[in-house]
Structures are given as C-alpha cells and as structure tokens.
Amino acid sequence: MKKKWLYFPVMAAFILLSGCDNPRESPGASALVLEGRTMGTFWRVSLANVDASRQEKLQKAVQSLLDSDDQELSTWKKDSVISRFNQYRGSEPQPVSDNMADIVTMALRIGQKTAGKMDITVGPLVNLWGFGPVKQPKATPTQAEIEAARALTGLRHLRVIQRSEGAYLQKDLPDLYVDLSTMGEGFATDHLARLMEKEGINNYLVSVGGAVLTRGHNAEGKAWKVAIQKPTDKENAVQALVDLQGHGISTSGSYRNYYELNGKRISHIIDPTTGEPIQHKLVSATVIATTALEADGWDTGLMVLGEEKAKALALREHLAVYLIAKQGDSFTSWMSPQFKAFILPEKP
Ligand code: ADP
Ligand code: MG
Image 1 (cartoon, rainbow, N blue to C red):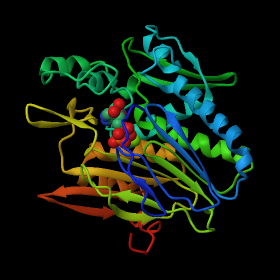
Image 2 (image 1 turned 45 degrees about the vertical axis):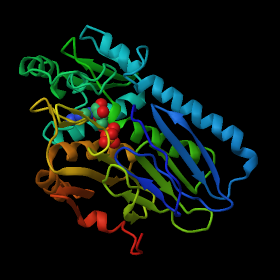
Image 3 (image 1 turned 90 degrees about the vertical axis):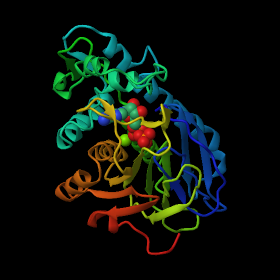
Image 4 (image 1 turned 180 degrees about the vertical axis):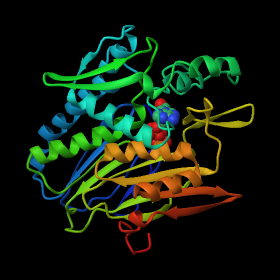
C-alpha cells in the first residue's frame, strides 16, 4: 500500500509480477487498458472485447472504488477507518465494514497458520525500522527499543466479532497498531474483480501493486499470462509463466524494498518473533490462491518463515507456492505440486 513501483518497457504478452515492481502486460489490439494510482502504487485493468466507449466510466468507477478502499485500510491516512481504530484507546468493540472484517479474519487465520509470522499488528516494529509512515531510522534500533515495540504487538490482542447487525473489531491493548499494508493490494485486486463482474465483464486481468487476478481470456482469445520476475535489483527478466485460471496471485520479495544501514540490507519484512527484519536466503515467495487477498497474506507469512519452513507449510496446507532463494551468487527456485498445475509449458 505504500510501495514504490518502477515502470519498465513492455516486451511480451504477459504481465510481470514481482515483490516490489509493477505488473505490465501487452494486451493485444482490441483490448481496453485502464491504469491509475492508488495506495502508493499502481493499478491496472486489462479487458478483452469491451467497447472503448465504456472507458471513461469504468476508469472513474475503478478509481473511486480503490480510493474508498484506501480510505478504509491505509495507515498512511490519519483519518482512515483503520487509523481511527488504531488511535482509539479503549477496548470496546468498534463497528467496521464487512470488507474490514473479511481482511482481518483472513489475516488472523493466516497469522495462526504461520505461527504468528504473518502479523498485522507488527506495525510498531515496521515503523521502528523505518518502513511505515515514520521515516527511515538513522541508526539500528537498540534491543530495548525493539523489545518495547514488540510488547505492543501480537495477534492475540485483536479479534473480529460478527453480530447480526454487523462486524466489529476489538483490541485489548490500547496501543495496538494494525497495519494492513501487506494485504491491502490483494484485497483491492479482488474488489476490482467483483466490480468487473458487476459490470457484466467476464474477461479481465486486474491488478493492484504486486497482486493480480485474471478471469477468462485476453483480447486474442488466449489465456492471460502472468510472469514471475527474476529476483534481481535491475533486470526485468522472466523466471516463469503462469495461467491463473481465475485465481489470484501475489508475490512478496525482499530484494527491492530495502535500504542499507551500516552496510547491512534492511528488509521491509519484519520477523515478529525477533522484532528484526528478515535476513535469510529466501528472496521471494509467490502464492496462487482462490482470492488475491489470501495469496497476499500467505506470501508475507512464507517470506518470514524462510525457505525450509515455507516449503513445509506449503506442502502441509496444499498451497500453490513458488519460492526463489539466493545461493551464493545465483538463485534456486522451488514450487509446490499445486503451483506446477498453473505453470505454462512455453519458455518465457
Ligand atoms: P512486498 O512489498 O514484498 O510485496 P507486502 O507489501 O505484501 O510485501 O508486505 C510488506 C509490508 O507488510 C511491509 O512494508 C510492512 O508494512 C508489513 N509487514 C512487514 N512485516 C510483516 C509481517 N511479519 N506480517 C505482516 N505484515 C508485515
Ligand atoms: Mg503480502
């Protein structure tokens, strides 16, 4: 929700997906492509066989939907729904929209399945390490600072309550700070897909930041192709191609969103157990799931777990996962059996 994306030239008929880069694709002649900005990143909608006369109205509908999601979910906006919940110091249940309840419910579920590694209450640590609305630190935080921030985190302090009149969020720690950054793009991507369905559009590719969802076919009548990008700082090469078949995909990567402090790479993904940025060899985790929201939740959890534990969890939970790890100067990749089913045989 706050990532900076780099644009690069389109070279082939697929969309490029990476932990920290924008997706691109070349949709073919009769496609309608809409794009814009939201949540500190880019959104993109590619449509096959939709009349160009609908462009303006659709563009506005997408933008206003995403702006309202941002107004609900962004911790960068002081008056967003989640920011107001964070500022609230009491422990009474606070009414929230079904959208918010859905995201938090999914986050808590994935949090539990990843042994607390995917933790939407990790905000105080994210801020301490300089990746939140609070600026980058000039020095490595001390152990005391880390412990103080860590004491303000923990999924056990947050719950979703469903009542007949609606949903509520409740916390039992006044300073709990809920950060939905890691799932906002996935959620917004699903939301765009629902908007397309409502508009009677069945062939689309929608994406927000690093999350993508496709349905149907592109303007050439072929499957939408999504490319997983090679994990390098500069190069925009393709590592693998997938056909999502109506699913959502999301990648979390540690190789682009980082800064250097005292010669050390500081990743924006924090291990809630240690309170420190992750440092292991896993450089990206890509997940395909029924929804982009779910994919976006798992990818972060797997990144924090690291290669071996991520593999074990993917197998245990039957997840469609693609991992890229660094080995010396080169990279190795691994995919779960479920992910293999989405891989396109052709060479990128
Ligand atoms: P990427 O930028 O690699 O695609 P995401 O945007 O999905 O990754 O998630 C990264 C963001 O999630 C961080 O900038 C931070 O706000 C938040 N975050 C960091 N560590 C965790 C964690 N362990 N659990 C949940 N959210 C986290
Ligand atoms: Mg994520």
